[in-house]
Image: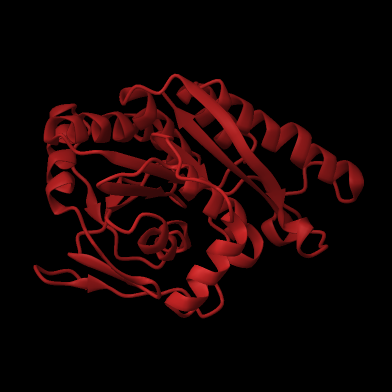
Length: 283
């Protein structure tokens, strides 16, 4: 519920992520044991349930630099949708409460209006693309505030990232950005079977469709990544990844690396499956 002292509560059904701080800490520790703090300006992270892509998401969040604010950009929007933002004062997670960076949100809105992209609308819908990341933040980035955004799969995604970079610079704020997207959703459950079913379909999804989108991100080309994500349905939230890349470029990133790749098939064999990737953009 929105208001001057409102707090957004968890909305996903039980099972998406652990229920307690103890379980969150235990799970994250098992996934990133021995890994030091990262230096990435922005990362791309998957957003399925922790059982499927939590390990990659944790590695992405660990790779992110220590920041005063973590901006998590989700997606699941259509081409004609506007940029969404959460306007609550804070967010409740099993690992603790995260305060919202309202000052940065205001600066971002001003930057978007000045660039001719208009304002943002309040995000009040149930969606996993941001929420599933939140329980990691109090543990991996304990001093950070949060900015909850969702980006559509069009040119506005690039401008959102750039505007966020300008807003952070104007405030002198150290910000880390997470672009939250899964990759190809293939199979009858998703109504997407351009190469039928079986081994050849799996090969295409992984080594052609997913690889094409990931390669465009590694080349740090916003336009190519957006086109690859949309044209062949290689990502469910390509705008989110492009916003993170654009923020990184605006903030001085010069290199990209693949942290890891996985698939829901690694957990459960099924004719319908989803790809996941984690990437880091660094100076």
